[in-house]
Length: 334
Image (tube, rainbow, N blue to C red; front, side):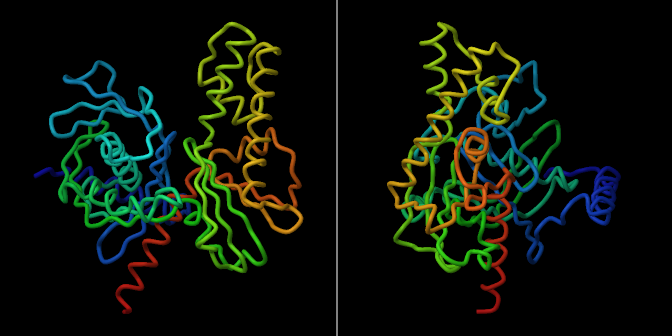
């Protein structure tokens, strides 16, 4: 049984308490002694309410030399945030997302000075895949009720008390439905997919939900191809991501122009897909969620009075926690 030294634990908890009292940190959501941890298991990044890291890992048979983000579990060594995770529609196809989930739990507990906890996971899946994949994803994350692992040199003992799976996109705005009068389209643009749904007069329209495999990774692939074709050079993803996120980077002007032009074309295609799903800016408001929002802001043409772009990359994870907490409260009243 793993144990954290009492002195270290008391010091960490006292520091967290002071930060909460100062308003620097929000209290960890908790219900009847169980910590609620929302995790947005994206194809590009893993997000919790307080953390974000790449959705990738490399596994090793022995302890690697560089181990800043090393997770040790069941005899395996995993460097979190290294390598590249290819897009897969089924996240239960291998152990990667399970290991990444353990890292996310550790990252979130670390914020609050905890290493031992009972947690309930609140996670999400693309809108039109939830009903088909929910039970498999729950079983995948619930494979072990009690989990012992080490992350960043700290030992963790975690009880997985339950898992709730919610629809992506909707969770981000679930706590703000009172503001959604009239007709509204939500476009949650992640790394792998774009989820589209309508909310009319504060109610989700369940028969108008769509999932398109047209996330921001498609833009990255197009940039790589156009830079190679136009300049006969390979461009590092870190440069591409900087341009997509901020609109520019410290690179030669002609290379920058190629990346910017490709991003503009990607955004035009985004709006074309939205129009295919009956987006009409004259009749409805558009709400853009996820990492793709920065591309629309930097390279799109739209009326800012009719389009809202959500900047908080952790908003979905926070939304999952909100929905989970509400569901747990309802269950005790019934």
